[in-house]
Amino acid sequence: MQPMSLLIVTCVLFVGTHFALSHPMRAGLAGRLGERGFQIVYSIVAIATFVMIIQAYRGMPPEPPLWAVDDPLWILASLLVLFASILFMGSLIGNPALPAPNAAASAQAAPRGVFAITRHPMMWGFALWALAHALVMPTPGQIVLSSAIAFLALVGSAGQDAKKARLMGDSWRHWAARTSFVPFGRQVAGVTPWADAIPRAHALLGGILLWLVATWAHGALGYMVAGIWRWTG
Image 1 (cartoon, rainbow, N blue to C red):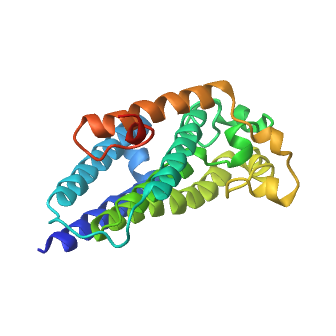
Image 2: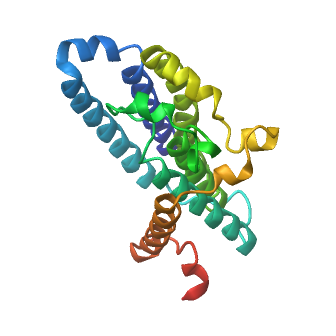
């Protein structure tokens, strides 16, 4: 199999198994294995298919970039990753979309910080991370990989809306009515104050720290130097 074909197949397998286990197969497997057993199987499949993607990506031959990458594009990508990091860190606390026992209680809270930006901050963080990588590494292989991650994050979020409405009922529907799927959608529409979208301390400080560490590690591990480290070396 050609390297690009292998990469596409592994990406389809990664995305397909996520959707299958999250929706049509979940109830049956969870009923037979229990919730904990299902989570173990889900994690094993996710890790295994992701490792397959990484191995396929590493097997790609050198590819010429599809467009020139200059400092303005690097600045844009760095800011996107910073924003993605803030969304991700903010999503870890008080997120009704996570499978936590207090999800219904979290959905009763007033959306603030990253949740006033979007009700799926973690998934949008992954999608923006993927977009940033495609911008500064514009090779066909990277675009396939980034597209798979962004597709899984955003289409998966839409599927999660339907699943959460089924599982949580009015709690989730009430949360969805007060939040936006698209970042800053309610602010642009004028129904939510922009001040509500200011990230809280754990999201802002944690996101900045994550961004600094991750972009530093990018260069330290032998990949392209990223973030502010491109201009401070």
